[in-house]
Image 1 (cartoon, rainbow, N blue to C red):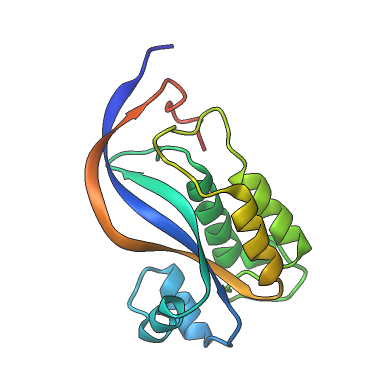
Image 2: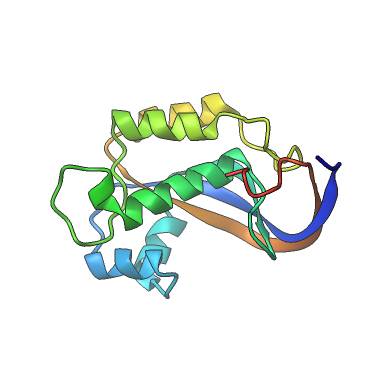
Length: 164
């Protein structure tokens, strides 16, 4: 194993949002496909949220590991492959429903791990847990807030493709 190295990336603050109002299926589909979603973008901007922490988008794969990145990846999978995570019949993308099982999965994903890049600071785990308890029954998304910052990030030997 080699020592730390530098990688170019974009740093961004990721936030977890809880949506209680219905959202049309075409808006949800556009959200997950990274297209313009005027209605859902507006809902996300005024919806209760809790800061997860920093994520880094690397100019090459894999992306540096962090608690916020794992939660974002988890919700992306649950939103784009709902048939793998629920008994409900669906062929549509969804906004994942915050139930007891998803709460446990989010808190497990948010737990710090040895391969996490130390400079990708996460919010206090209890603040995230309190948010999840308060908004049980809501639909969840993660969203970046603020402008991304281009930088170089020191990553350790765990950044070898096994960090996610």
